[in-house]
Length: 375
Image (cartoon, rainbow, N blue to C red; front, side, top):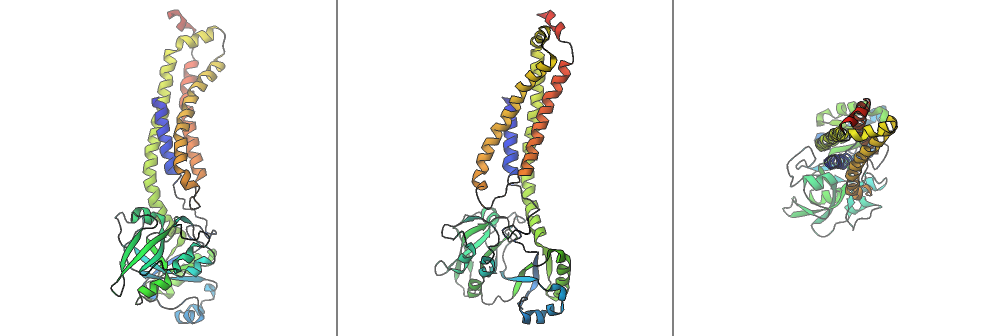
């Protein structure tokens, strides 16, 4: 019972945490991945006033003289300063940073994946909901699900209060949670509504950049040179996502280590139980040998008995863990690292079988028939 319990608890802990482990190798070709096929994430100290996609904006910014930057597309985001609500900030956040986006840019390709949506949002075209005010003074917004749950400690349908430039109160209702995106730490609202409530905010301090992957380093370095007067800093979208993932994975790793400790104790304990079992059953095993049973048969018999304990412990821990992550597994925003979990469970089984096989083989090497003299 002790061995089965420790194995079950360790297996449960490893699966429930390992299933939520984020992978840094996000598929950059998938529009619904965490990077949304965007190559770079750029931030500037001074807002960029020109539209870098228009011929006039490229002329003013000097991009028209850069033939190697042809084909690069820019999505401008207006920004209202606020607190960082990402996992890099351990404090509870009241008013996160707001980013104003043009929903039309995201509706075309249906960028990013949603972990949860309000029932009033069209699941096929969720981004279109940002352009529709809910009532006077109440507008819809999206945020990363991690921000909503942990940074804000709220749920879908809850509201946040902000002061507008006119002195009024703007209520922002959370209508959807993004699954592991580069927007972690910010609240997303429509650019049209952003300009209505904050008309003095001009230009873009945050820009999403999409272009050829083979030109990533060149585009990054060249843009930082062209816009160095604005304090332009460019980072890879995948690297930004990896930073967020690494923080979450660190917390998960702690729980996985605790689960691994339980597994180690369980498998070692199984070996101890087996040694005691063999000591108490020496006369029985000696009788098997005296009656002519081969050592190979006796080894299989005892191995099967204790392998049943090992498999039972793993199954008892696995089934509740799978039940625990089942609601998330059926969600379109959940990606299970099957290979990672399979590798961990394989190591658990291999460790357990090793602790079973080693005591058995060492015990059955000896001639046990003399043990019958004490019977």
